[in-house]
Length: 407
Image (cartoon, rainbow, N blue to C red; front, side):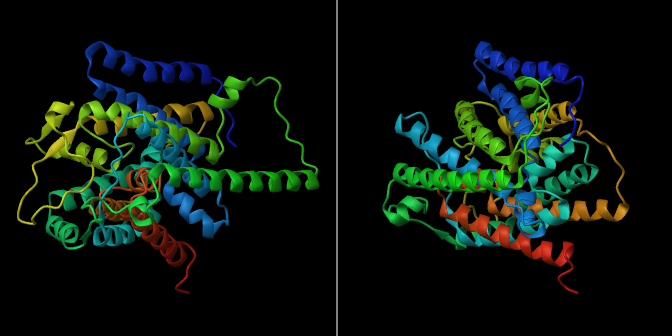
């Protein structure tokens, strides 16, 4: 556990301003796109506090036999399920599961999962680690942006469009294939079942841990000079705590993105892509409110010969940029900001890994955030397929690249 920064109160005040100010601007102007800055900032804080990188969560299961991060990731999903079910019941949101294009999710998942190991993180992981000063994550983000652009606008566009069209499967009503459409059970009922199973499992594991601590005679000491605010702001969090916080944030993200024409919770892949578009193109169309008719982040099947019109969703741009800043502020409170040089070989590997991550995420229409945190919470079967192949590919690359499985 890192020691807290003595100036944590100053950074806490800065964080408070970064959360409240965009909300006030949105309320005054009526442009809720600015709310994305608050969501992104908090997202960066929560990711950094819990060190909740999807790639690390997968890898640590076989490298260190630690499942705490993957448990935190699961709590993001289940918390989202519960809140999405509640919000949709009251008519506050309209559920938007992604369609099942199994070829896109299989190919994208394999490429994405392998790339996360080489890049040292998934897209959200690289974003928050960049805020901590990780140079490999910074260069990996460059590779991610280029890789995603290759799929959306470059030489891999035709292949991606073919996979979308050739492997699309719909349910009996012509909509997305989901767990409710396969089982015949409602989304709300399945959410209740998932939450109940999670609560029982969590209680059993908690009781087991309490018994283990009691058997070892370990007593946790709390510094009496540290109040609750300091422990929350200036200390790392357990992954499960960050997971629940991100799950709640997903619903707030959905609320704030709907007025901009985007009907979906958290996502970061297209935000990184849009930043690349802003830096390299001059023919884009900025989208900041519903009247602009921003396309849903769900992939759309298009003929390979049709070049998509470049659009930039400002909600996602603000989200990913403020995410990095939020991570930096959070890391400053915990003393985690370190800008260290990296060997050239590691830098080149990170760039190549980022390229694979960007290609895989663009083919699959999302990453750990959009396809697993949000997609699994919406019970999209396509996103579940993506998650399974991403995890298996991640494990295979860990075995070969990190554990020397070829020897």
